[in-house]
Image 1 (cartoon, one colour):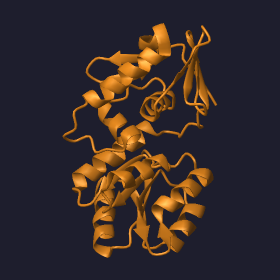
Image 2 (image 1 turned 135 degrees about the vertical axis):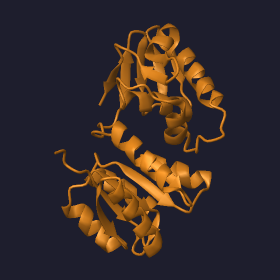
Image 3 (image 1 turned 90 degrees about the horizontal axis):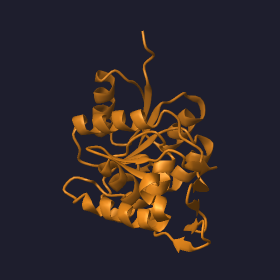
Length: 235
C-alpha cells in the first residue's frame, strides 16, 4: 500500500481551515493543521511534510516574510500560499520569495486539490538554485542577467526572459505549460490571459541566445516549452 502524502495547513480561520483539512483528507492526504505562527514553526521543525499550504497572514507570522527563511531551512518543501490578497504585487512577491503557487480566496475545493496535485507532480525534489547555464552558442550569467555569446558579444536579458530560462533550467526534461510560466514567472493567474505574452518573451529570449536559441528553448507542440538537450545548468 503506498504511503500517504502529508500536507500541513496553516490557516487561522477555523471554518476555512476545516474546509481545507476535510477536502485534503477526503482526497487521501494525511493532514496536519496549525492556527498560528508558533504552532506552524513547531510543526515545520519536527514533521515530515510533502507540501505546505500557508495562509499569508496568521497570528504571529507573516507568510511572505517567513518564506525566505523557510526556503533556507527546508529548500525542498513545496509551498502553496493561500490568501485573500489578490493584488499582482503580492502574487509576484510570494512567487519570488519561493512559493510554488499562489491561491486567492475564494476558491473551490476542486481547484485547490488540482493545484496541490500539480505542485506535487512538478516538485519531487526542489533543485538547487541556478547561477548560470552553458550551451553550444554561449553561456548565461544569472547574476549579471546577460547572455555572453561565443563571439564575445554580451546581451542583456530582461527579468521575464531570465525568469523563463531559469524555470526551464530548474525543471529539465519536463515540458512547461504556458499557464505555469504565467504563474511562476509573471505571478499572474493564467485564466483569461492571452498566452502570447509568454510566446513573445520566449521569442525575444531565443533571439538573444543567438543561433542556438530555438535549440535551447524547444517548443513542444500542444504542451509548451522544454529545455533543450545539451544545455547545462551551472549550480
